[in-house]
Length: 537
Image (tube, rainbow, N blue to C red; front, side, top):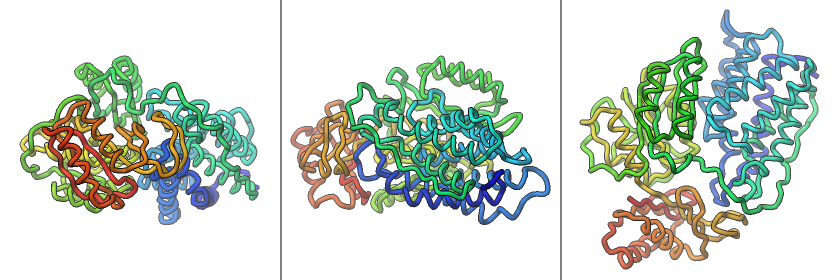
């Protein structure tokens, strides 16, 4: 039984947490809102904590002469390793929790129950700081419940306080389907929250010497939900504004209030430096000028990016100027070749923060645009962009969710434009490209398009299930029809590694009959899981 959390205990917690996550990796991967075969939260958490353990193994013995305590140094190494290895939203959020935790324990001489509670609260605050309007039923809710329970214990008994926190986290996890409609519909608990519970249980085992692993709660049966939280905000706002800001924390508080009144999807993340830090600002608004002006009032905004969601792409672009580069995430050999032919540096799918940062630095360019091509990788790309700023590299992330959007963005690059204007043009082109994915259902589920069974063909448009079919070719043709019904002049088809022979020929022939004035381009993408990716411009 340990009375305090020393450096050796931090190391054992990291190793034990990693081992526990590996045991539960498949289970957490299956906690997927959609019944598609690429759920990877468990995998992302394992890779994130693997990086944390590597950082501890390499540098734990290099305690500086001044600064944090030994346990604080270990906690900061763990947090920094997690940040550089973070994959997906779950990995990025976990790294923020660990960063806040480490910042709190670094300056205290001993970490007992009350200090542990304060550290959990600091980790919760660091994670929540990134989100303007947190959605209940996520890992944020789970860590907040753990922190509240630890504070409520009001004790210096570290093992007892950690156990109370872990129990509260498990109880909060069980309630997540009641709080988030998408989880209720899928009949699962939050995957990131489950991973956090595994880590807290691992800490309790380190402190007590006894296994306290708790099984995942059994959610209620899937049920239809009246509403679904829209990750990208409301349709009321036409522009996405992003910029970096050098400002003091007190000025950023006013900025949050100003931007919150202008729009939605507000995210403001700082690097933790005092008294003046660097902040990454993101918001959806209708008044772009007012949003930028709010940044000027707060401090010094730069790397300003504006995306107009509804615009059509720009004309074909001229070659890229020297000193600029593009880094693109690609899953599939054919897709990687397409990006490489456009002069982009290609990073394999599901990269870590450190891998993306290495790719950015390897370009040798002072200005780099990153195209993540996945919602989870977008958070990793943003973390890599913040780290690149420390090396004097300006990085702008164009929030592409599909390779077809990245192809549209790369097609309009123009080295004769200012870098900021070029990024805006690329973001506009990506936003004007609607995308769809066709795959086979991996399990039984209730979707907004109705119930599906394993093996059914699912067509997801902009990340939401729109069609459920039994025949792959017919469903691919149907989703193209549905998307072209909203307008479009060009269709891009990327076939997956398991796509049957003749699939694109059949879809191309169907478009020629139904939409004779629409241009079709088809390429072998080689992506796993999805026989067909579709882009409409």
